[in-house]
Image (cartoon, rainbow, N blue to C red; front, side, top):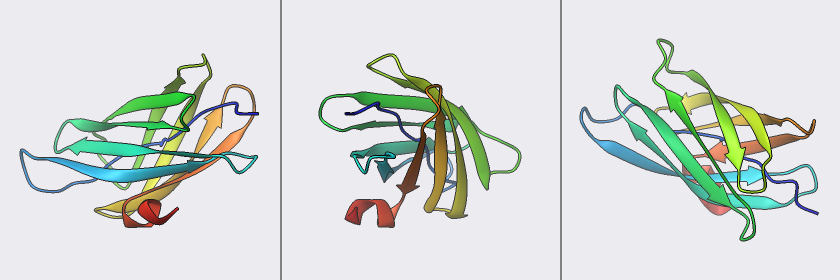
Length: 119
């Protein structure tokens, strides 16, 4: 049974070229092993957004640019009404990972960047 959430991460992006939007693949794994797939888009100096789906439920969120760009927090909202809070850590300017803490108590792990494309 899918309870749906994401990345987060959910999720997400990183600094790149000034004035450019940069997109990254996102993969979110739920506590029961279900996978959501999607993309995060980062706009330099503005923040970013993400969306992912498991084919039945879609989740998305936005984050504002932080002073410390290695870490961001963002609200998550899913099409089934579930909400949560994601926290992402950038491992490089183009990849990272994090956790989404959903209102139902579940925790969802996510990756963004090249490693997410192979999940």
